[in-house]
Image (cartoon, rainbow, N blue to C red; front, side, top):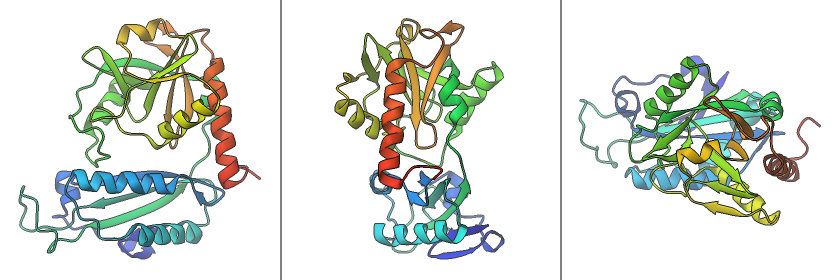
Length: 287
C-alpha cells in the first residue's frame, strides 16, 4: 500500500509520524474524504475549497498549493490502481517541540500531509433498504463547520446509536436536528425537502451542495432550515448524505417507522439524479 507523505509517494511502512506532531497530540489538523469513481476524483475542487476554508478558520498555513496537492493525489490513485475507492487525506499543523498549546510560528513549523486510498463500493443494500437512526444529543463543539481531525464527539454519538441497536445517530441540539454522526440529515414533508442551513453547527457537505443543485433542477422545493426533533416523527421521508454515503434513506427513527418504512419517492428521485451526475462526470460506474 502506497501513501502520499508530504510531497512523496512511499510504501506505508516508510511513513514516520513524530510523537510531537500537533495532529497526534492535539488533533490539530484537517481532513477530507473524496470519492473515486472510475479513477476520477469526484467534486475534487469543492473538497479543496473546503480544506482551504478550514485552514483559514484554524489559522493554518497549508504547505502546498491546490494544484500541487491535486497532482500528487492523482498520482497516488494511479499508482494504487483503484478505480472505485475512497481517498482520505489529512494535514496536521506539523511538528512543534517541546509540546506547547500556543500556535507555532508557521514560518518555522511546516504542516504534515498524509493520504491513502482504499477500494470502496457504493452502499447499494443501504440505498435499497434504508437505515435506522436514534436521536442522540448533539454535544459536539461549536465549530462543526471545520472538518477537524478531532472527531470524538462524532465517534461517541455513533457508538451511542450502535449500542442501542441502530445504524446511526441523528443529532439534536436545542430541540433542533443538526446532522447525523458523519453525514448531513434531510427531512421530506409534503413534498418539500428540509435540511439544516450551513453554519458553525454542521459540516457544509460537498454532497449536500450537489443535492441542493439537483433538487433545484428537478423543481423539488428545498428549505435550508432546521427541523425540530418532534418533526422527525411526522416526516414523510428522511435520508442522510455524504461523499461515501451518497444518499441513503432513513426508514426508522427511534421506534418510529418513517413513512411506509421503505425509501420514499423524493429520496429515490434525488438518488437517481445524483448517480446520473456521477456517471456524467466520471463515466458509468462498473463499466
